[in-house]
Image 1: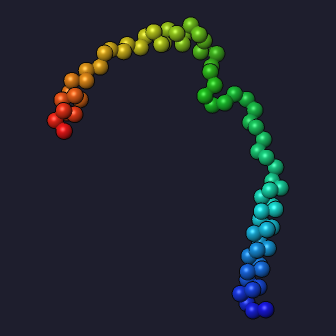
Image 2 (image 1 turned 90 degrees about the vertical axis):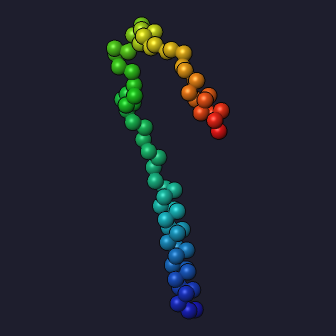
Image 3 (image 1 turned 30 degrees about the vertical axis):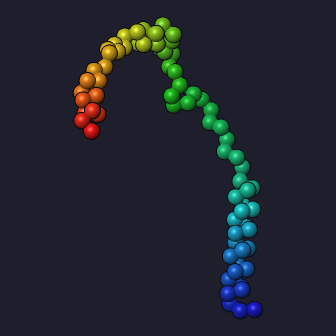
Length: 72
């Protein structure tokens, strides 16, 4: 057997051992506690509705956009 055969066998063994080691790792445990984006105690339906109602959406002016598109 020549040198390249030994290298190929070593690489195959290392890959097999790596896959075996990786597959035997325990699954990550779920974290406990509230997630980072969880609602605080001050967030309730009334305050959320109040915030939503305070948003002022006006009818957008698409005139300049239409003019630019028509000029193309």
